[in-house]
Image (tube, rainbow over the protein chains, first blue to last red):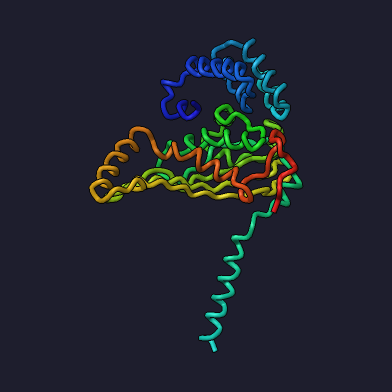
Length: 81
Length: 216
């Protein structure tokens, strides 16, 4: 999907990506599998691009909770919302 | 006298060079044990502009499988660009103390795509992905690990006589251009580079065998 953002940006808009990522959350929940590092950070970034700042904030918080290593960057993103 | 010395010097040189293929030294990596890795887009020596992001988009999965926290590559790339570093060349020049301050990353994986794409020959085509990689400690600038991978896939591998080969080459050339075969080779190349035992990275903190793996 990330490759698609660059190889065919018109087909990988924020909307399309968000739908895909939200679907992945459902799949991960139903199979009780963890999501990869950076997943919620990427989702939060997409939300912020769409002006959905509350959703963005909560996605960045989730990333930070699951992966404390991301705290410095997530706090930076949150402070910019 | 000179005639004797030269071959001896040559032999010594050969011995020194072959010594370079010694097993990976994991001392620095084992002492530092980074938890998080930042991956800026690779430098691209190939003639294919898409190589940069083709490679970048497949680097997260093996690093995460290996147990590391990987900063979201596309977001990091955008963040760099928004802050005045338009290309991977500038990103690779970014001072480590800034990377520490802004991202809080433990280590940076610098990569260089040396070859990427499909070479067409008479009755065959070969897809090649070659990459150099270096993991650097953000706090000290020390190199923790270095790796290299060269992955090739040949359209002639299916065999089947000369006529069979011709057809196969023609078919794969068409497939190559439409589906970007080199991109499909990237996950395999990345996994080999980063996850091969005794050559790849040690396991990170999210791997069940963290700190308990066998180190040569």
